[in-house]
Image 1: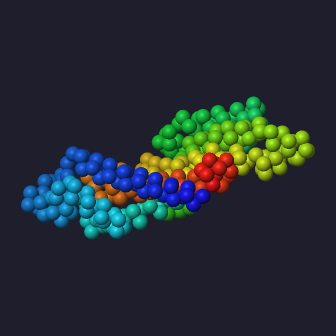
Image 2 (image 1 turned 45 degrees about the vertical axis):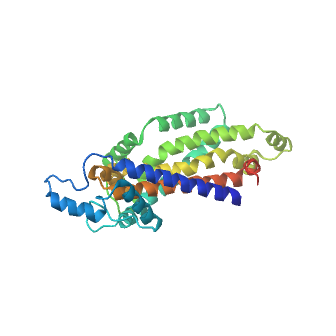
Image 3 (image 1 turned 135 degrees about the horizontal axis):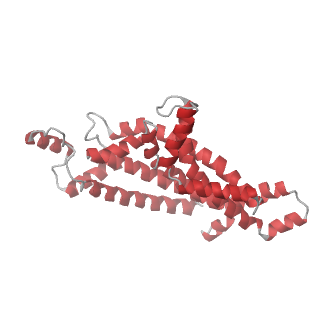
Amino acid sequence: MFKVIISRLLQGLLVLFVLLTITFFIVRQLPGSPYQQERKIPEHVERVLREKMGLDKPIYVQYGNYLANVARGDLLASMKRENRQVSEIIGQSFPVSFALGVCAMAIAIGVGVPAGVIAAVKRNSWADYASMIGALVGICIPTFVIGPVLAIVFGVHLGWFRVAGWGNPGDLVLPALTLALPTAAYIARMTRSGMLEILSQDFIRTARAKGIPERTIITRHALRGGLVPVVAFIGPAFAAIISGSFVIETIFQIPGMGQHFVNAPGDRDYTLLQGIVLLYGTLIVAANLLSDLLNLWLNPRARTADGN
């Protein structure tokens, strides 16, 4: 297990290094300058600003300086938001996106796992067909369609929730539900496939031959093995929910990371965009690591394959 953790951490650090390097050079290929405005500023003023941020130096020098700053934990100052550090901007907006992601993931698991288990246990029944049709619909309809529909139905017509804003617990419901539905659909299909595979194993037939109640067979014997594909999916899915929530945050006017992720490229705010990408990359690496560890715990065959 320890070797697996070290190996995954080293792989994750390599991924972050490559991601940061690619992002650094790509954002500098964007047309325009961070100091472009509707009213052109004098050249000598722009020159002073570029010197202040180190943009007057060769690109390889800028790259080395940025890596050195990141290694010290300094994400530098925003190029467009005066007197604002990138770490400060992220620190204010990330908790909002994280809370939204946690709620969405909880809804997705709470809906997807039971639906998949029921579909597997009641295979080829109306419950199975209904669950899988619902999952297919959830996969096919994008979140930018689901969000406005939920806002119109539950916010405008029924008046149960606010359609925009942040501050009340109820403001989490519609955006979290919008983010959760596609993920819940994938989880339901994976749970069904995993459970069907486990339910066809010999040890399940032996348990049934011994007269063990079906509920006990499902909860104690089949569920752990059946959830292995789901566990492998949850880690990346959680990171994808947080990193992909910027569309939903824009629709529901939520002050999370999405607003900065959308505005930073247009503003040519190099440091803010690099900081956001680094944060999202770290989340994905951490989520994958946690998913791998849970998979090793649930699946003894995976531990054997890794030499543990």
